[in-house]
Amino acid sequence: GEDVEQSLFLSVREGDSSVINCTYTDSSSTYLYWYKQEPGAGLQLLTYIFSNMDMKQDQRLTVLLNKKDKHLSLRIADTQTGDSAIYFCAESKGGGSYIPTFGRGTSLIVHP
Amino acid sequence: KAGVTQTPRYLIKTRGQQVTLSCSPISGHRSVSWYQQTPGQGLQFLFEYFSETQRNKGNFPGRFSGRQFSNSRSEMNVSTLELGDSALYLCASSLDAQNEQFFGPGTRLTVL
Image (cartoon, rainbow over all chains, first blue to last red; front, side, top):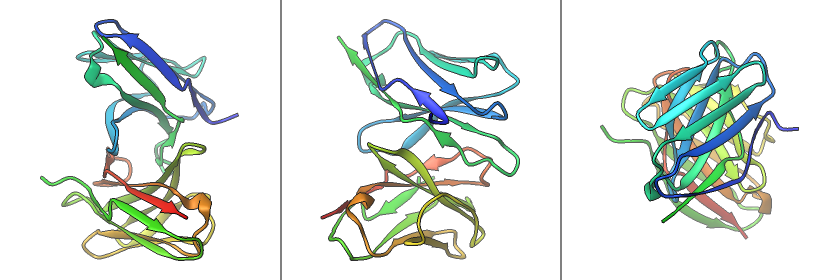
C-alpha cells in the first residue's frame, strides 16, 4: 500500500462542514501537513500538526490526529465554493528526513 | 515579497529531446525542492538543493538532474524525454528544508 492514503473525491453543499481523511503508515512521522491546490496553481500550506498534538484549530480549519490509528483529518467549517480545490495530506519525519511524502489528494467539490 | 516563479509555464517537447526548467525562489530562501505531479503517481519528490548542493534525492532515473546557482535559483533538466515524463513539475522554496515550503505554479510539460 501507499505511505499516505486519501479518498479521491468529496462533494459537499455550501455551508456544510467538510471532513477530509488521511491515513499514513509510518509511525515515526513527526510533522503532518494539509496542503491546498487550486486549478493552475502550486500547493499552498494550509496547516500542519506535530505528532505530539491531538488537535489544532485555525479559524475554519480543524485538524485532528489519532496517532494510534495513524489517522489525520481536516475539517472545514462552513464550506464555501472558494474552498473547492484538491487537498493533499503529507507527512515528514523531521530531522534529516524532512522531505514530505504526499497523498494522492482529495478533490473537494462544493456545490450551492 | 515576490513568490516562487517558474519558467516556462507550459512546454511541449517530443520524445528523445531534452528540457530545462527554471525556478526562482523567494528572496532569502536557500532551499529549493522539485516535485513531479502526475495523475497516476501523484506528487513525487525529485531532489532538494541547498546552497548549491544536492542534499536529498528521490527515486528517479539519472535522466533527471538539477543544479542550484549561487543566487539560489535552480534548474532541473530531463534528458531523453519519454512520454511518461509528461507532468506538472513543481518547485518549492524555503529558508531551509525543515521550514514551510512555498510552491510555485509549476511548469506543465507535455511530451509527444
